[in-house]
Length: 467
Image (cartoon, rainbow, N blue to C red; front, side, top):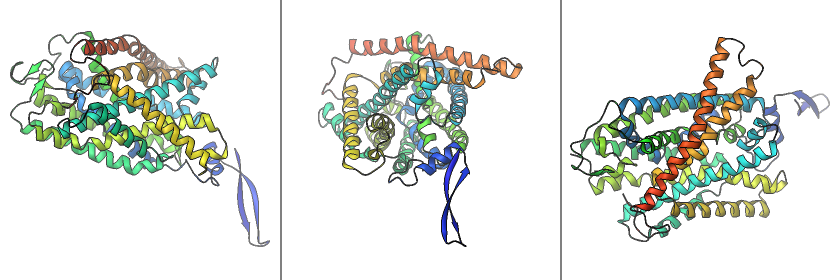
């Protein structure tokens, strides 16, 4: 691609403009040099920090519960296996983005993946993007209220605490570029890391856990773990345990936006490799320690199994920062999609104008308001993770990238044994996505119905959701 480059000529004392050959991504970076707000600012190191901040979240503390349902062997195998699958599908995603630099987000990619119905694919994917991110923000609104209730001994109505969390989220979401979020992401990861360490240390030093989903200690006997499946968990519980682990790994919905904002998108595999290694260590260690010390009494999050109130409060307090920051990252991506649809390529999209900032703030408030409603309707952490994993991760983590593999290799799918093997693997990935979307979504909805048939009576309740 040709780009205009200014060159100073010392003999004529004039600046001459030459056309030079540059790659598509460099040309796009040159194009925005005169803009007030520059989006292509991320190094691969910053991208790693931002993405790691997204994954170091409260859902990690649900892993011990998943392993208590699956046992040691199945729990580790599924955690490790999903990590490898996620790394592979993310690498396919990057290859696809490099081939199509015009794709700035997951919606652009969907339009290319399904060329016979590009507009329908774009619009439906945009709807899924918004719903996925708003559900995630709603999850963090729900979590914020749980934290405030736990720390304050349920000082006010739960709905009030959810409103407070939403207002904080609106304020922190005001920056329009991800570059401003990188520092917050580091702080978020550190805070969540402290919460994870404290929860593991407290579980280790306490005499016994407080309670589990099946009863208070010692109703279920002494703490014990199982190499294989601990009894017969049932289809619903077993599938939801796998979906909870899947939710932690799947983050590809954000990757195209990150790649589009990198100085050198060619370096994304470095960020991906670093991220996957960190995730494997963090997820495996946290799940193993939590399951070892809590066994059949493990809850989601594992902080809920701690027997001492001071231990719960001191560990849970550190979760507040990542609750806001991770919600902000997803809010930024969702808001940017709506912002682009409204203002397009007008000057307001990249300038500090009243129209630009007014539109951005209005979108920000709208997203967090819808998330506030969801946080009051969906009754538990496990229900949030299950329904998001089934409804959205089935596409964004599996189905899309099997289709992308087909487009990248459609002329050589069965060319040799290596390509045949990879093609079969991608067919399996596609089928896994369909399983999550079908039976997985059924079990997630069934879990919500079960909650409303039991302890949960109605939405928008003032009843405390403290640990």
